[in-house]
Length: 294
Image 1 (cartoon, one colour):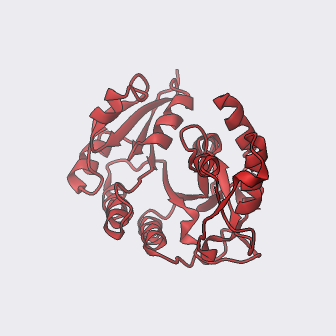
Image 2: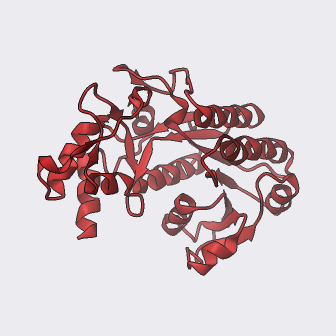
């Protein structure tokens, strides 16, 4: 009988809890760490799947105490508790420093460490595709903190894998749908490109990497996680209006956004890893989401 591996999901929130539902529980014992696991238990969030543990990832003693009991795979999925410079620094830079200090000194090193980041590290804009070889140029404190954390992890744990996800959408992540329902949209010109990925593909890709590594296959140190069709936000919103049964006149409020957010992301390495997207573009993904809403 194959021995279970220990998968630790640090900062186990929505993404980690969803992943826990889809992983083979005969192969993995799933441990989820968060500052207040009672919140997850109170909402019955994967309570029967995840072995919840209390811990603060900015405290070395907490991480050391938990991971020293054994960790084969460590998945770090932190999110800021507040969208401020201090919140981002705490959520990413401070936690990265702790992991960088603890993991290399564990009695037994994990076989795989995955650090979940964001394509927000790319502050540049333009029509050229951005891929993993493109130098990131953050344009705000969010990207600065994300990139600083990545560099800490990369230097301390050289064989770690960093995944930069684009804008995640799906059940429970319907901010764009709410904007369209309210009649708000981006300006048609200049085109402001949006890059998205369905939450099921986020989970699917992470599981793909975990299993690929388990089979002895090498992973790239960095992946961009996005679907295959960057699209101007205005075009996406026009499509959603029709798909939701409104007329074009419904989009009556133009909301100005920074052109620096307009970029095209390449998912070439993601696809080259052998992963097949369940929702390769926004039309497939949002059609499924709207159908599920009824």
